[in-house]
Image (tube, rainbow, N blue to C red; front, side, top):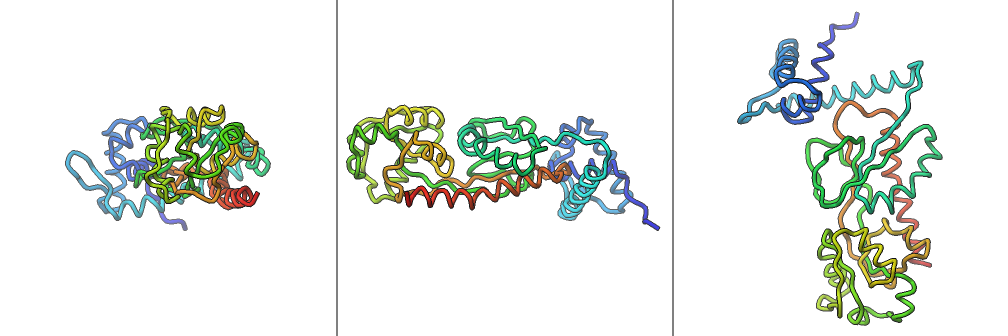
Length: 305
């Protein structure tokens, strides 16, 4: 005979509170009062005979014991959600909400989504964009794609790819200027971006020309503006790959020095550590991580060509 289960409503609230980091954060996420969260967790502690949260200043935070329990509960809720989806009679619309920086969304993710749709035609992927200057995680999403320093404790992070940066320009500009050596770049216009400072300096350092500087520079606030300026032939820029592989494949941009690249930030997929991870969401995250190998193959083919 099955042993008596803990109160499931209290378990759900506890799992959110452990992930969110405090009673107050859980109350905001669940649209409950602080008192309601406190009472449910107290009921669970009474059932378990074990304190789960300890006071830290003005907040109640999960103990290491509680965090371990929360991870197992989250996994159990995932299995329940999967079973309900597989055995339920009513077909529910499968939606994945993705939050990504504008350039990565437009140039890397969205062009690849038809590949995912071929494998999972019943899943609707909805993409919302953020500017790279936005460091918060506001809005509602199932997966967030971000680069650089990542928050700890609230998300499961899956590495997608690490950028490699090199010089990009329009084919017409390369023909017009006749640039064939790095030294010749000094006589040209360099395009820079406020949100990606130091890209030129880092690339020049890796190319063993650390003191080379431009005759003229144009500075833009966001990279997607810099990218458009490069496509329009306003100057040379430093572009990230594999994000811009499609631009090169289409002929809108060219890479004059394909073998000279500097390493950039790592992009990761962040999945909130909650119980709402159905099969199609996990499949999407696995598909995202598999693109790294595809992108490397395309990049190598582009360099050989």
